[in-house]
Image (cartoon, rainbow, N blue to C red; front, side, top):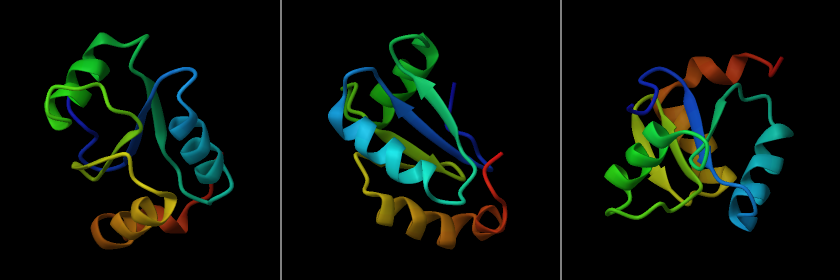
Length: 93
């Protein structure tokens, strides 16, 4: 499994305070994204390890195939503006 080459994917795990913070902040944005729980999805966990030096560091986010480990909401939104600006025009369902 690789990061979504067109959209935004947030890789997370339960009880991770950094994941909770980022996911909450993104929910209040108009950004449309997909979430993957690395404890429930072995392929997602393997992907995170592949971009986080072998660690399961979350949150890890991909924006149009570009990976970021433990980004802030601002970093995610900046990456979206750069790599996938068409996603900013859509609302979250």
